[in-house]
Length: 273
Image 1 (spheres, rainbow, N blue to C red):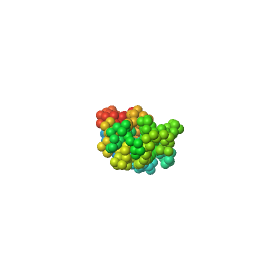
Image 2 (spheres, helix red, strand yellow; image 1 turned 180 degrees about the vertical axis):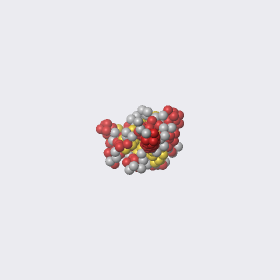
Image 3 (cartoon, rainbow, N blue to C red; image 1 turned 90 degrees about the horizontal axis):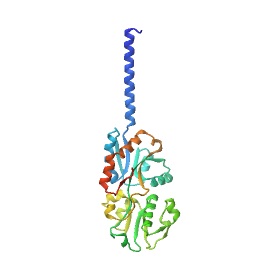
């Protein structure tokens, strides 16, 4: 048996080691629940993420929302390490950005579906669309393709079947245009500001909301909410299995966030989870 003094010293040493282990474990746990910078688009994304922040805080996850008004910037900021994640795009848009800009960004969870609409300040119904009308569409490949598909669905144009199949239609793929519509590709953020110069324009939901437009009340053509364009939370590939990434998705998929989307946006935005 150890002498009393040596036993006391050993117990004290073990206690200190235990305290150090506890402190280290607590530090690692805190680091695992890190503060995150999330890039979102202006408008509805800001509102939803204010609710997500509260849900995330319950799990010790601090979220800082960084707002962008240009679809080309959030993925570049994420790839450069200025953001931990972003939530503004659907998978076809991300696929195009990864391919064209060399990013290695992957989805970790679904957020919302934002049905696309064509809006007008000159006509109240698509039946009143005149021959030779100017039609604004997005100039980025994925949303431009989406707008053209919506025009085809409304029987205003016909696209090459191969372009439809590959989801890469451009104005060059229009093979029938009986009304001789003038397709005008513009930056997505510019389309609401160009409504006075266009007969109709395809406008993404976040920009439409900022311009005071709503899908249910103002759109003359509406995309089905059950389409393939669910938005995503995206991260760098190296982070996709990090615990915080799943915590972030869990916060977005919380009941209060789902309820907020359903009650606040009345079908203009639909939970995709």
